[in-house]
Image (tube, rainbow over all chains, first blue to last red):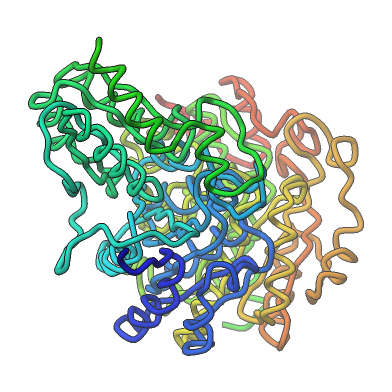
Length: 311
Length: 285
């Protein structure tokens, strides 16, 4: 097994790297830095760190104000709270003015330690995706996290980046460069396409292996650029494979599955099955327990692919 | 210019702005008139005396910043921007239109001179705090002025921002509360009492000055005092009258957002001392 690393584990390191490169970079925290693991930046650049306290709405406004002075603010806290809690501030104070604010949502989806439903962001992609000017991404692993963070500092405009909590292996190849609006095909295949991102990329690849043992060749696409989404790759998958399964660590309403359906139905209608949380709230439990309860395991993904292939 | 002459001049400017705001709304037929008229003197002193500001370069890095957190009062800001030559007189004739810089609430990027989009109440002070912290990080000496409504203080985010501003000892930040005592539906006392605002701000670590928000001299002096306060932000609690200057609108919740018939607009402009000819010219569609 290759080295396992959580996306949040590299946040401190990459923010220090960017902090050295960009003297304008400032980091905002809402009392979450030990969990978001951004303390290396705080130690290295204390004068460019702003502790907001437990006040995410205020954090978004302060980030907006900082950006107007030519600074490059990164607002970093729990995904549920920087999306649901501060939704209107993100829209009115940041996105409406197209301010150069980066929002890092830690603990996205169901995997929030044992914190349960109040802390699970199953709505954040839907919220952020429907705000104009906002770019939405989730890296698949720690290596892509660094690439996406490097990209974020160069791109002018508001951006929401989901950062996973727990260790996953490396999926992106050596020398990988992130491109906005471009996906990464992790496995070729022409019988069906599995579109995934973030924490469930590993399970989706496993599902493709299971399908392979049954003679089904599934394409696997890592859709880390959620908005703008890679329409070209989706249409190509629809045309070449005819069936699509999407895998969301999010409510099936508003997530990547919804985004894929939008592209497919307008351009090349084929059957799409959305694996994800089916409009229910989450629960406390281990990631494995979550995957089992909400049918997000590799076997569940493979089963859905087989079902859709029968239709 | 001595301060007495300066104050006289600012009073004249305030009067001209009040007339202009009534003309714009009278011509259009409606608007957030009450809360626009209560901040006339405050904006007059800020823009025409207090702030370091270059109308020829609204993005000048060292400019003082102004945020109208109570964004619904924006017609007064638009009138100011027109007086500064940033908006044209012609623009003032086309408010609320799709391509107009004069949107229903201020929009950054749409209206030159607007520093940040506001309108959703409670958000402007947080942005002001960010600007003030940003100025400090960048070793700039600009100052930040945020105008809030008293109804707006119902929003919890304001208190988050108040707490943070004093924690960061932002003496480059001034919040001015337009205490016109009414919000949309009723008096602030009836909707949600917020008094004593001054004591609450003090408890949050701010230096507080209570003034009459229609006295140019008191605004002038308070802003001067604010410059001398070190180590904490300053709040100016300005007692104002919603719909100030128009007898049938003054001190009434209905003036928050109201239609203005042609006859009412004429009466209002007559009360402000406009001539019949001026009124006919101003209300031409």
